[in-house]
Figure 1 (cartoon, rainbow, N blue to C red):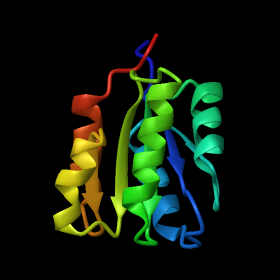
Figure 2 (spheres, rainbow, N blue to C red; figure 1 turned 45 degrees about the vertical axis):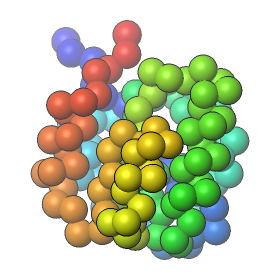
Figure 3 (tube, helix red, strand yellow; figure 1 turned 180 degrees about the vertical axis):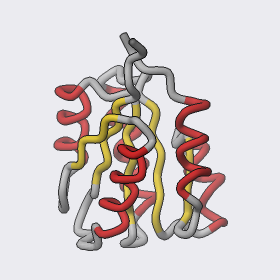
Length: 133
């Protein structure tokens, strides 16, 4: 039996909009992935600790607040400090096109601005994430 891709869907910071994250989480489950949803108002430290405890393959951040650059910078820095290089990170939500190169430079693997079709995100995950043993 193949191991399922394990994904942590996280809502960092003060962003209080989680409908989209819940819909994405369900679409990922429907595509055969295991999904852990953190709930609202998670700190970077909480996200990292949950990712470690749950042994996830991917962290997906849902950010609607416009704070994606400082949040992603802090997360990727902490992940390097914790030597979590084998966990991919994607971000979705309100992401202006001008910020995509900055996110890629800081180590965000996949970027899915609002309106990205589910099948596109799911295809990217299936092509790029290999479940850890």
